[in-house]
Structure formats: structure tokens, C-alpha cells
Amino acid sequence: MTSRSAAGWHPSELVGWLLLTGLVAIVLGVVARRPDVVALAAPLLGWAALARVPDGPPATAAEDPATMVVDTGLVSVDIELRGTPHGAVKLGAGASGARTDTVLVDLGATGSRRVSVSGPGVRTGPRRLFTLDLQSVAPALEAISGTSHVPAPTVLVRPRAWPLGEVPLPTSLHGLTGAHSSRRPGQGGDLRDVHVFGPGDRLRGIDWRTTARRSPDLDEIYVRRTHATADALVMLVLDSRDDVGPDPATWLGGEPPRADDPTSLDVARNAAASLAKAYLDGGDRVGLTDLGRERAPISPVGGGRALRRIVQTLAVARPDPHRIARVRAPRLPAGALVVILSTFLDDDAARVARSWRGAGHRVVAVDVLPPVRTGGLSADQRLAWRIVARERADRLQQMRAEGVELFAWTDGGDPAVHLRLLARAGRRGGRTRTVGAGA
Image (cartoon, rainbow, N blue to C red):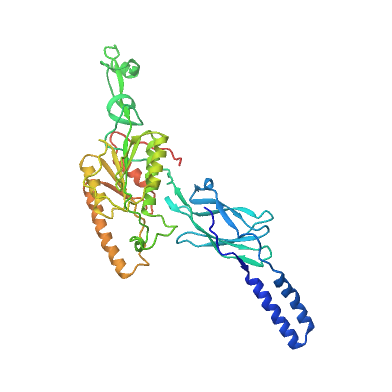
């Protein structure tokens, strides 16, 4: 990012005011026959006459891409300002829909200064940062340049994974090892029963206390049998077709959402990243597919590399201007827990969620529509929103009636509470666990 050339230097308003003040003082001194008043005008006119436009070009700004970071809700970028030594730069920074802040930066003797510009970080994905407006000021304020507009850089803001507690599990588990107890007998899980020693039982599983109590003559030997452990298979389903903010007036694309308003896709990205981290930290396998793209899904895998790949895929997801019409729901691994994140503003996402539930999957639907603001809507817009909201409510009710578990990520409560309730409601044989609280 480098500033474009603007109009060159020109005398500042201060020079004009001093020149006008000096001429007025001379006229008043002559009319009033006051030599002292005329004498006061001399330094003013002399300074105005000696004012010179600087020889060098106006200040420029260069941005270092390596300094772009996402940290606790702020997107920050370092800007290198270069201009006239001992001069100054009037720097204005603002984002779409946000307030523009203006500061005067002293360039010092070197004619350069590094400043840090930060903007709200509630938005994720590919986005343009704030726009910078530069205006150079000469060392003695005798000249000022035209305004130079710095094109806003585009950066990729990755979603942030928030800590979660208990999370729901699928109705069936996979694999020969993992963090959860399955229904089948095996080693390493919770206690299944105490039984007479038989073929296939291990000697280290003998329960000598139970044996001594039940068979003092040692006619029978009892062993403690446990459930086998397995891992959960989770498929995150992102609906990137909608990216709407809290203001319905912006949904048709006439104006963009405010920079400090998270959109539905921002909510979905952060929710999916948080869920992926929660399951992967527990040793489960997580995959990702997108209803809005005809791309191969990310197959369920585990580990830190899987989380980085999922977060990167979430960050670049955005609405496709050429929407696809799905004839059938994407195929998912058998027995996987399906977590679909959508606004459910149309029937497509709800239809595929119901079809997955009918195929035997446990389906958790996450409503990512931000709380809608209707205060500034016109009468026609308010009526349109009431119709959309009524259709959407009927759609959500039909999903619940067909067994889809549903909660809103942005209903004002803590999503971890909703997930804990779903985890406890879906327990089968104690299959649940709590993930760590690290973000």
C-alpha cells in the first residue's frame, strides 16, 4: 500500500490570514494616523512574503504487510510516513460506516515516522481495512498539500476460536481408541460389569476382592470388564451463501454493513472455529464442508494441522455470486455428528439438515443470524422483515419437529451453555467429556 500522488503544495490559509491582517493593520494605521499600528503589520507581511513552498514532494505512506495482525478484536497495521524534515502530516483513518479519526503527526528531523493504525476487528475473512487520508504541512505552517488518498489494503482476518466446555457427541462412535467410552466391550473405558473369567479375558483384569467375596474356595474367578474407547466423528457444515448484518436494509447490497457490525458469516466463522478446536482438543476427528461451494469437503481428521486448515478455509469462505442450487444434500460419513451453521433464511439449509436427520445422523443446527435491528426501517421494510421472520420461524419449528437440535449462537446468552445442555441431553452410556478452556 503506497499513497497516490495528490495535488502539490500550495500556500496555507495561515499565510492568507496573516497577509489580510497585515493589510488591514496598515489601512487602519494610516486612517488613524497610528505609526505603531502600521509597524505591527510589518512582521506579518514580512513572514507572508518570505513564505516559500517546500521543494520536496508531499508526504507519502507505505505499509508493511508483515505488521498486520489480529489481536483481541483489533486489526492493526504499521504505517511508515515520509515527508519534509521538521514537517507534519495530517493523518485521517476511517473504515466504512465507522467514525474517522484525524491526528497531526510530527515527522521530526528525519522526515519520517512510523505510526500504528488500528481498526475494529469484529469482522473476519477477506476485508478492506480503513482508508487513510494524508495532508502534508510545511515546517513553519506556511504551506500545505492537497489530500492524498491511500488505497485500503485487503487482508485476511482469520476467525478466533473461543473456549467451550462440554460439547455434544454423535449417537455412535468410531475407531478402536479415543476419548469416549463406546457401547462395545474393550480396554480403557468405563466399567462395564464384573463377570466370571472366560475366554478372551486378561489376567490383569482379575478382581481379587470380588473373587474372594463371591467365591471363597476360588471355584470361580471374577474379572472387571470395561467399555472400549473410541473417538467422535464431527462434520461442520458452513452455509456461506448469506453474509448479512443486523440491519435488514443492507441485505439487498445497496449499502455494506457497518464495519463494527459482525455479519452472519463472521458469526459462523467464529462458531465453526471454536467448535473445531473443542473437538480436536478432545482427540476427535473434524471435517468441514460448505453448502455454498461445489468443492470437495475436508475429510474428518485430527490434530493441530487439521485446525489450521479448517480455520484457513473458514477465513476465505464468502458468498458465491453464482449461487448453486443443490439437488441433494452433500454425502457425509456414516455416524458423524453434523453441525450446520446457517441463517436459515431459505429452505435449502433446513432441507438438507432434515434429510441428514432422516438418514440417522445427529444434527445440531446453529442459527448464526445476528440480532436484527428494525428501528431505522421504513414501513415497507418493516413489513418485509416481518414476513421473512415468520417464514423463518416456521422453518425452524419444522426442523425441531423432525429431530434437529437447534440453538442460536448470538441470542445474548453463552453458546457454551447451549452446548452443555445438548451434550447432556444426548448422553448415551456416559459418552461426553469436557474440553480444556484454552482459546
